[in-house]
Length: 246
Ligand code: ADP
Ligand code: MG
Image (cartoon, rainbow, N blue to C red; front, side):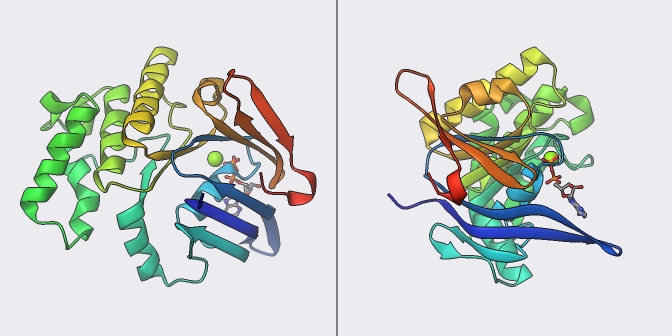
């Protein structure tokens, strides 16, 4: 099967004044379409950096990244923005909604870049995805008139509205209480199963890992282990010997 994301020997260094920080070191991995993948590891291990590279928000210092088997490593900022607008949905720890826009306007916002979508089609998608996340009645509410869980639901609808190949979620439950986090996770799992959208999480949260069917553990910018959920529910852990892909 072809991969929705493929990463080959990717490294990322940041310059901080005189210093260079090596955030990722020789990462090789492949992600199949339709998975619910949790990337876990201690704070500072490189989870967000990896997610930003997959999301084409940032570019690797070396190595190659393929989205739907197209090499995106050396594209221009404008080409990457187009790719994101068509293929990649983002969900953040702090929701990142625009405070002056209503829930519906927030969901519509990334669609405005899509010149191929008429206003009627945009509106249809906004209604459809607000409904899927259970917020049909809250379309006109501003973020500050919504609870944390509801805000994250708006963010999920916004991520889905472009009908992306992948949704990237960076610590999406970290700012929610236990019960709300669990609810949000169940919703994402349902969307994963029913719409077939690939979800990739960076997370500390054991609950996310409990729902996942693939996992990657990273430490100091390197992959320590790959895990595949077996049909009996247990993890088959594959150690990352010399950067072997799963
Ligand atoms: P995580 O998400 O697992 O906590 P990050 O990917 O945010 O880890 O960070 C990995 C490493 O890269 C850390 O040492 C962090 O300090 C460093 N880093 C991340 N972003 C930047 C940046 N923009 N400039 C300099 N260093 C950075
Ligand atoms: Mg992070």
